[in-house]
Image (cartoon, rainbow, N blue to C red; front, side, top):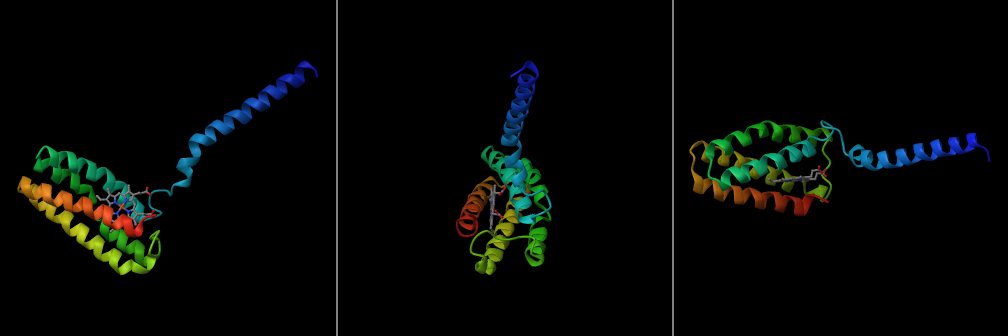
Length: 147
Ligand code: HEC
């Protein structure tokens, strides 16, 4: 084997190693749907962030911060419901119980509205109890409808 061969093999092995390493990092992101593909996932990703902010604002009893944390949620419920009708939203589990899903979702969004109202009044007791109810709402819905 001559020197050129060695260089070619070294380069080829390096390229392969690089490809392997980069696919390790890139693949998990590629598998995820792009924003806009599934309004339910978009809503959940947003809700996840919003809820963390809500929890910390409720923990320190700051109604103003709770109210502003909730603002990005406006319109998400409608987009999800349109997605259910157009077929863009596929519930991963118990699809036959879609009626129950819609009811749970409505109750959840009603509680978000109630929380926003309590936050505007800076009613710390209501903020805390509604936030606990909301957390139950996440878990109960996921138990039935999420993989
Ligand atoms: C009415 C039902 C319902 C409620 C309420 C609900 N979720 Fe979900 N959530 C779902 C379903 C269904 C999925 C699975 C979506 C899928 O995989 O297609 C999901 C998925 C998620 C995901 C994963 C998203 C992803 O990238 O795959 C997160 C995070 C999440 N929910 C957070 C929350 C949080 C936090 C709350 C409460 C503050 C909440 N959800 C309330 C139904 C709900």
